[in-house]
Structure formats: structure tokens, C-alpha cells
Image 1: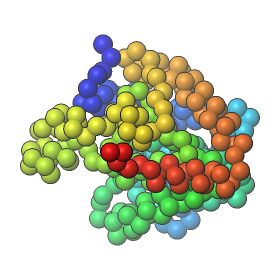
Image 2 (image 1 turned 90 degrees about the horizontal axis):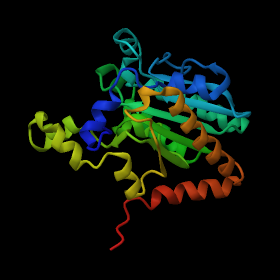
Image 3 (image 1 turned 135 degrees about the vertical axis):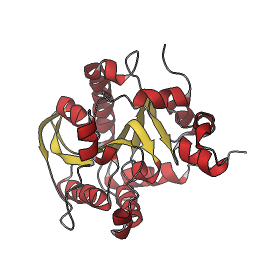
Length: 267
């Protein structure tokens, strides 16, 4: 049976076999070359990025990286990026703009890493600058939320001309457990909190936060990664074809209006 509630979807997307950004890139992008480092501190393995060809078009790809085993998840910090990860992403954004390459973003993170070292190195500043840079980037930007879209850690790679979610993905300002801990002082109420947060793809499409939902195979993306990748590619190719016909001024104006209109009460 397909998951219906937000909490059921949350359990499904935590499946360790769910496709990772590396699998999407391997299936969708030809001649991919991974880039490393932020040229300031180090190389954050939680952020995966590089350049390649999508259906013959040169693109820059950046995404949160999770693993398929405990060892891999530890190596990738469970997809929770440090400031140097977002600064690596921004380095790739700048390069994409310089060479006129569209940017593809894959979001799957419970949130940015909140350790002392990350805060000392400017975690909030790095995320804020990444959001700002994406807002004014002079090339088309497409985001696909493939699993968890957690808080500012997700938003740092999610500002785009088009934002899509996989059918069972979630996207929220805070985790349900964090929400329950703050509101009710009881983290065990996370299932109730998940429903109140309105974090599923249908919820967010209804609010105008995202632009579309990409269907998953029955049972979830992990049951047929190849079919999921085909569905993602169809959306990316179609949307890029449309966005790449727009001039820079139109692209930036439309992106600004997209986010400026969010949260407006219609009465």
C-alpha cells in the first residue's frame, strides 16, 4: 500500500536503498566530472558536485550526498553539510554562471550540520549566501527534492526557477521531532507534528511552494531506481528546454516574483 500520511512517507524515504545523488547523476548525466573543495577550508563529502552533459546540454550538478551503508553515511555525515560544503556549491554556481551552464540541484538532507566547528566556520552565513547567490544566478536553476528537505540545510540548495519533489519526499522548516520538542516538550509526538507541518509534496504543491510532483514506483523510489531516474530526467529535460529560451532579465524577474509571492494571503 502506498504511504498516505506524512509520517509514513518519512519512514519510506529513510530507506537506505533509496537512490542517492550519485545514482541520479550516473543515470542522467554523461561524462560527469566531480569537483572537490571550497578553496578555503576543505572538501565536504556531504555535498556532491561537478559538471557533465544532460541530454547533450552542459550542466552543473550539486546535491546532498547520503550513503547506502552505515560506513558511507558516516563518511558523508548523513547528508548534513558543513559551511565548506555550501561554499563548494557556491564555487560551482559561480563557475556555472561564468560558462553559461544551467544548474541542477538534488536535495536530500535532514538539515545542515549544527556542530560547534560548523558554527564557528559560519554555517548560517554560508547558507544565507548560497540562497542569495541562487536567487540572482544568471542561468536557469532546477531543484529536485528527492528525499528529506530539512530546514535551512535544504533551502541552501533549493532556491530555483523550478522546484520539484519526488512523490514521497518531504520539505519542512523543521523536523517533526524538533517541532514536537519545542511545541509540546515531547519528541514522541513527532507523528502528530508531521501532519501539522504540511510537509508532503501534495501539501506543498497546493501552497504553491513547489512546481510539480514526480511520481515514484509503487512502494517507493528504492523499488525501481531506474524507473525513478527516467521520470526525473523527463522533468529536467523538459523544464530546461523551456527555461533556456528565456533571456536573463526575464529569468531573474520570474524567479524573484516566484519567491516574492509565496505566503501572500489571498483573503
